[in-house]
Length: 372
Picture 1 (tube, helix red, strand yellow):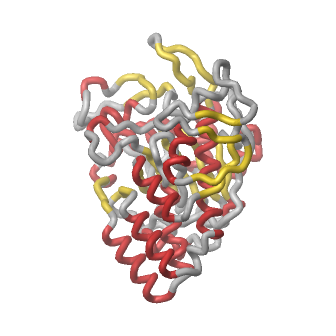
Picture 2: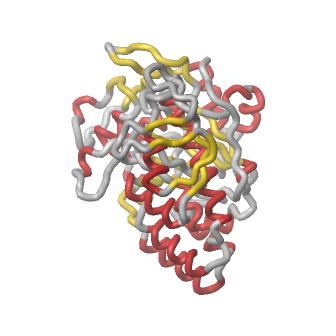
């Protein structure tokens, strides 16, 4: 079984999200921006600060935001026979990142980052499970796939599910792999990530020096994209574009995509810390601006209730948040492609723990699993 990295726990409030499916909680609360620009934590943060900070005016703004969110994903439209049952009141929110930017053809968008956020039924523990984009999985047959429906029903890299059938097929693929019911979905693109970080006035991140062959630099890491930013090793203050650029990188580290997933997880913490230190909780002008920016940045499913879940999860803190990566056996080859090989035995144990709301016990028994 291959895991890399270490435990990543936050130091600021974990943002609530979701609600409205009849269970005590309807959705989990956090997501992480990535190469494909995601930040599910943005919507949860909107709920968190709206519920704690600004009185009637801010509460009204939050409710308006909840009502005005773009809701293109109807999970109830997925045939029930194809989906696992929900066993308890725990929350499972799928956070998806898209590489779509304004003016580009949305049909060509890809999702290279997917994080399942699980919050236990008591609302006292939260877990983020990153799914490698290259994980070799079975993509269920899906006649309604918008691209290449004839390819479905076969094995492929995980991110093929989004390329072929968007959010519905991604949900079906995760549920087929895990047996875990996905309650809600949050999706964000490149522009959304930049908006959220800039609305907070920027973030601080601890930059990891490049260590891969051909990229080694003990002083920091240079981007291979766009403006070719250089990020010095150690703490850096990043704008939205810089944060997006850093968490897109993977080739400069020997751990490749696993390093990138670690940086995604670290970015979630950085955004939470920035929301507190920037005074977003106490300045109504900044709060309104942030809410407006975040609401424009994401797409959610039809039953995602931001405000209700904010109330339910107000006591959840980032120290309760633990990140991990879906169990895998490292990289290998399938059909001539370099892929991440799924660890079926340990994967089955983890997903059973998620479905039964016993993830805490699983983590204690598999402490090497924490972190990307």
